[in-house]
Figure: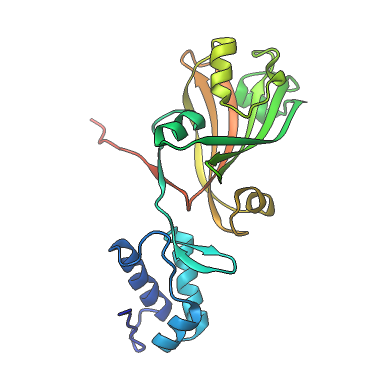
Length: 245
């Protein structure tokens, strides 16, 4: 396997192992979905404790290079789907451009009175009715996003009658003539709760990308306020920046 550790080095043993395993992944010696040697195998070969190996592996999982499959071991993460942070498209359109069939499971759909934060994001009065929808988005059979969205019902009368297993933006476009064209919000790292783990099929406390955004029409009218939790073992997030003149 040609991994070596220097025990009298100031560099921690776990980091030496982590760095070398990462390089083998980057160099293609371990391909996506390949199984890594077990903790026991690495511990015996390198003559270090399993705690040291576990720490190195945990770091690789946290960085997104590896995934842990319960009862099976540690595997190199599969190739990721790229999401353009500066682009704006609905999930269904995005999936189809990848050549992948999208699927949506609706967990909740209900009418409720808006709280102050949601009302502010949607530019409505607190207490105005909103449609709250919680969904799991799939690429084929793989759950990849847990999404909660709030929509102002005074603007889209009768919207609550739809099923929302298909594209929400398609419904808005064809039923109401509304085109969502830009989003504004924040990205943060979140830790998977029991709910996230159950719906997305990830280990408890694993990292997720958390996006909060308000979506607007071209005229600046808020269409929806949304929370989205992305699996970082499935997606990578791309952007392009330019120097200001």
